[in-house]
Image (tube, rainbow, N blue to C red; front, top):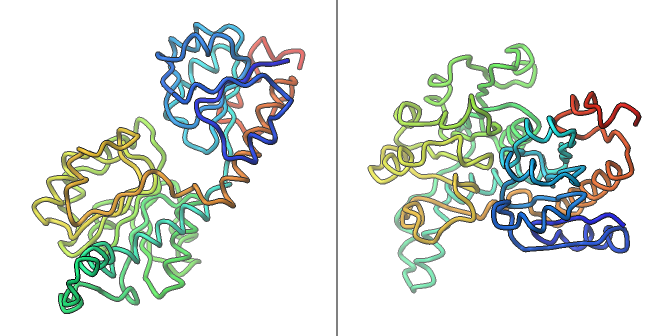
Length: 325
């Protein structure tokens, strides 16, 4: 029977789907440096939180598949996996609506000053209502940076509550955006400057890491809010902290940071104009069930020698290991 290492236990439907199909090792740790002895036993590795690097992949000759229950693969050395003939299974489009809903939830929370209002009401400060901090969303503009599955869904949800949408994505045609009655800008700073809310929906890639920095925050309206439900490392966090601390922007709603799990002493935790959630946008019951079942199905399929289609490195199937598959 194959051995599957899971960095952390999956949502219960995923664990049920694995029951009896493999020997399971769950170190409750995703740092490949710290769990290397367990990984050396693995035929498959399902990575929820953590990383697996080139050194670990090279040290695990039994490893046949790496699975991410999601779409982000910045925590996996995909090039090294491909060189070793290891498919990296992903779960595309499973979480689009959940992440878009979380984005909209942050938009509402920020626009209605919910965090401060709840905290002050609990203290007995009923007069917080007279701060008049809440704003209406109808007629406000959300700038969507990245118009893939999640960006499109977020734009649609925001437009449904009366918001205008401005799109920046260099890989999308202007006419395709115009057909949806959204505006389009091929200049990021111009697009950022239009937004009352600026929401990032881009993957973590060499070209996007640190992409949103001082210049982009300076281009935002002082009354605008920044949103990130994508990847933490696409934002320069010191520049964001400076912009928020100096009230160069109104606030931020963040589901991701560059370093996770998030630390309670992180400077962003101390800022009253920031709402932080623990990388949970895709963690709805419905989406998580779909995702873990997709992850398990793909993992088991590759272990059986099937060329599973939902991988981020399809070129891996040209590797000698797969020539007779």
